[in-house]
Image (cartoon, rainbow, N blue to C red; front, side, top):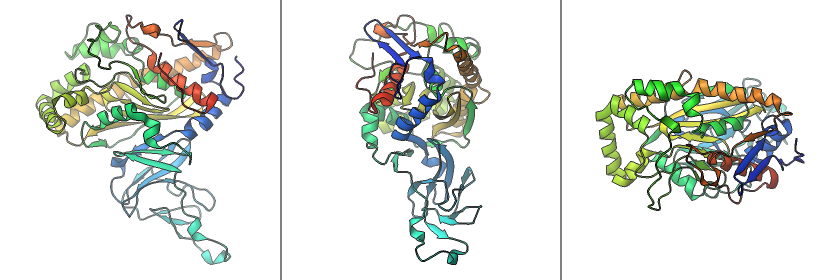
Length: 439
């Protein structure tokens, strides 16, 4: 094993001249590396926490873990959105034990009964007269997250009080791609939260969620059997070499977006997601056409086609994955090097008619749901990788060289994974963003 000296140096082979990229498998199994990831990545990034549609009215709240911390996201009685640390200032217990609620006026710690309002202010202490005159109730409110940013309803938080501003962290490319997703309509997270776990390293799910190479094999039932049986495609599938794009100067395909953010497909007005569009046309054709007319009216024809064409699968570093073709928002956090907990949501426009919403949800659940064509297979695949890493002393390196030196003749590239790993290495070794993450 390379001596990473406390900063993960030597765990990546990145030979751009020869076209070789490899990752040492200790990155997936080592406790010290996970400790570094927590300190230098998760504690120093903007992390996606939730969407305002989950707690839209004063008194509405949700609780979840973000970056290893229990958090309350609440719309307070003054209408402000707040991210509060879910820990009582007395002895540390959770002050809110429910996953979700509405019309809350206070949060009451069940352990000793301390009471906080929805702004986080400490408002009630049983037997307060037992404290000395030095006791300062006003200083003992619920601690807010050090940084919070609301981008068009998407709530991001950072635990670094000196974190760079949100716009700089995202950069113009990532913001453009996120906005392209959000421009589909007045977006909301559909009721229901897909929460599951996996006995695999968190970085395997980063790779898998942007990996077009595995689809034809891992998800063969979907692409080679189910889609053709529904009259929605068939023939080549994901591994079919694609014709060269027109030489018109437009960005297409997998694109680094700076700071470790990357997309498998840059939004363009001439791109259509065949599976999703065909499915919606088949099961909600009239409603979809009406929806498209609304997009054109609001954004113009070319922009409407770009919005509906979507942006493939994309990563907002380190762990927000948006899978546009299935309306998925996904985050995941490691508990140990070989175990992670995953959150998934379906983000859809409020403008949908009931028939169009049903078709979108059926498409989402049929592939991304707990019993869908993709999720169980992906869990099996990634847990199999983690089991294979038990051979790390004999087989030290994983290869992620596919598509280097501009070679795309054989189908999907692995550029998007290399973008992630280059930022990952820079963060763990220098504490800074990578200077350049492309090939």
